[in-house]
Length: 235
Ligand code: IPE
Ligand code: IPE
Ligand code: MG
Image (cartoon, rainbow, N blue to C red; front, side, top):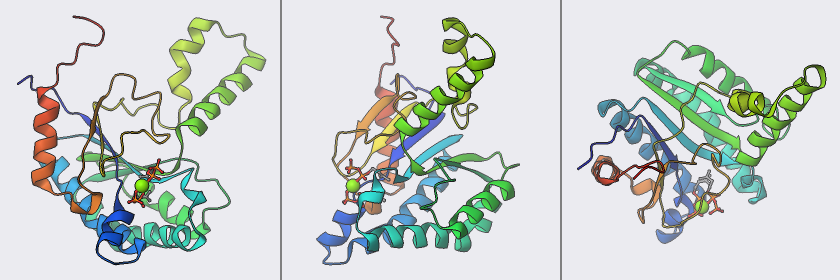
């Protein structure tokens, strides 16, 4: 046992649709069931003194889903904030919404709630919850390049300047890189999530569907992470 320090856990919460279809339900019922898994994961992270949790809730590619499902997901993400943000606030959770919130496809009410929730929870320190919504890693990297390019028009940057400051042009430069990426539901891919930040992250793909996640499964995830030997290129 190595007892690695799990400071930042990132999760691709996948398998909601399959969970619902397996039960003969509409795909959207799987998203609704996933809310309990998120809530359990937040409690588990607080209990295990994990300071950063980044969850993938809606990707830049998820706009390609049916109009009904996209509409449901917009409604659902709004509804969670309306119903539960006071509870999360009382637990000491600080929200950051990772992704392009200026996108005109996102309903104004969602945008307003997300900004309000960030403001409401900004002093909390128990758990930093990064909620990736309309997030895509390509977008994030392209925006960083564009910002650096604009800066470079006035000020000639050296390659060293660019390397040293590149990450400062990401949306939240203060967020540490993840120690562990967990993806549920058996797919072994990254799906445009945190490509730059995952360079030395441990990856774990499990078969359980997101709505089935509970503290026992997460305890096993932690055990597996602790057994990993993180060498960072050294021997
Ligand atoms: C993940 O579950 C939730 C979102 C992408 C919003 P899916 O909806 O991708 O579920 P599957 O992969 O189709 O089972
Ligand atoms: C990734 O899951 C996005 C989220 C979990 C929000 P998807 O189900 O959308 O990804 P693919 O289609 O399997 O790559
Ligand atoms: Mg999926």
